[in-house]
Image 1 (cartoon, protein in one colour):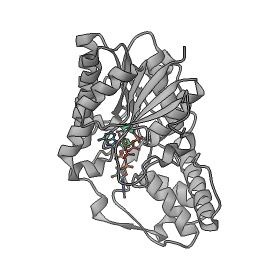
Image 2 (tube, rainbow, N blue to C red; image 1 turned 45 degrees about the vertical axis):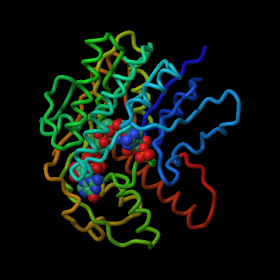
Image 3 (spheres, rainbow, N blue to C red; image 1 turned 60 degrees about the vertical axis):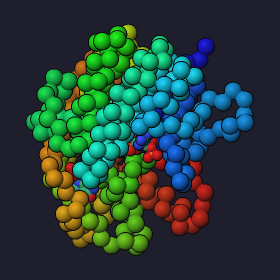
Image 4 (cartoon, rainbow, N blue to C red; image 1 turned 30 degrees about the vertical axis):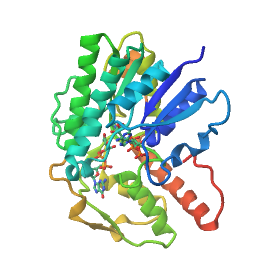
Length: 337
Ligand code: NAP
Ligand code: F7E
C-alpha cells in the first residue's frame, strides 16, 4: 500500500517541492488550498490532475488554517499517514502590519491542526514548519539548544507553534516533529523575499526593463540554503523511528550586501549603481544574524546540504533571466523553476 500525505501550504515554495518529492516516492498527496479570487496554484500546475480522473495521486481540497472544523473533517475523511504543516503567513515584514492575522494563521493554525488530529482520532505523523526566526536576537551559531528570542509577530507565532507541537508529542504521544529551518530559497521563492526580489531585479535590469532596486537593511546576515534539499530533510524527519526536533541549515552565511554582489556579478554589473535605500523595507525590530548548526540532523538522519548561498544566488539569477526571456518571446516554459 502506498502512503498518503496531507500538505498545508501546498501552493507555496516548499509545498510545491515537497509534493514533487512525495509523488516521486509513490505517495498519494492531498493538498489544502485556501480559496482565492484568482488562481493560486501556479507552482503546482505542472502536477495537476483532472478531478474526473480515477486514482489520482494529487488531490486538492479547499480549506483554511483559520477553520478548525474543516480540518477535523478533512483529516477524518482522508486519514493520511503523514501531515506536513507548511501553511503560514510567512512574511516577517508583513507580520508587523498584520500581527493578529499572523498570530492566528501561523500560530493558532498550528494548534488547530494538532487538535484536529487529536479530535479525529487518526493515527498520523505531523511535521511542523518551525523557523530560525524563533532564535531572533540569540547570537549565532544557533542549534536545537539555543534559547528562543523572537523579534517579530511571525517569530512569536512560530514559537507558539513549536511549543504546541512539543506539547502534543508529550501529552498525547503524537508523532510530532519540528523542523527548525533556516532561510531556504529557490527560483520558486515568493517575489517579495529579499533573494528573489534581487534575482528578479537583476534579470529585469539586464533586460533594460528596470533601473533601480529599492531595499532596506543590507547588513543582515542569513544562512540561505536551497529549498529542494530542505524538503528532503522534512521527509526524513517523519521516517525516523522516534519524533524529535532538528535544525536544518547550511552553516554558511552572508550579508544581503554580499548576496547582491554575487547576483549582480552574473550579468557583469555593480549593484551600487542600481540599489537605493527605502526605509519601508526595514523592520521595527530586526534579526541581525542567523547561522545554523545542523550537526544533529547530519548525525541522526544523514542529511547534508550541497548548495551554498553564492551558488544559490547564481542559480536564481540565471532562472529569472531564462524565465524573463521566455516571457518576452512568448515561449512556453514549464515551471520547474
Ligand atoms: P510560502 O511560499 O509563503 O507559502 C505559504 C503557504 O501557506 C502558501 O501555500 C499559502 O497559500 C499558505 N497559506 C497562507 N495562509 C493560509 C491560510 N490561512 N490557510 C491555509 N494556507 C495558508 O512559504 P514557504 O517559503 O514555502 O515556507 C513554508 C513554511 O515554512 C511556512 O510555514 C514558513 O513560515 C516556514 N518557513 C519557511 C522558511 C523559508 O526560508 N522559506 C524558513 C523557515 C520556515 P497561498 O499560496 O494561497 O498564499
Ligand atoms: O529578509 C533584509 C531583511 O524577507 C531577509 C521567511 O521565509 O526566512 C524568511 O524570513 C533579510 C532581512 O527573509 C529587504 O530586513 C533588506 O534581514 O528575505 P527576507 P526573512 O525575514 O529572513 C525565515 C527563516 C522565515 O521563516 C520566514 O518565513 O533581508 N532585507 N531589504 C529585505 N527583506 C525583504 N523582504 N525586502 C527587502 O527589500
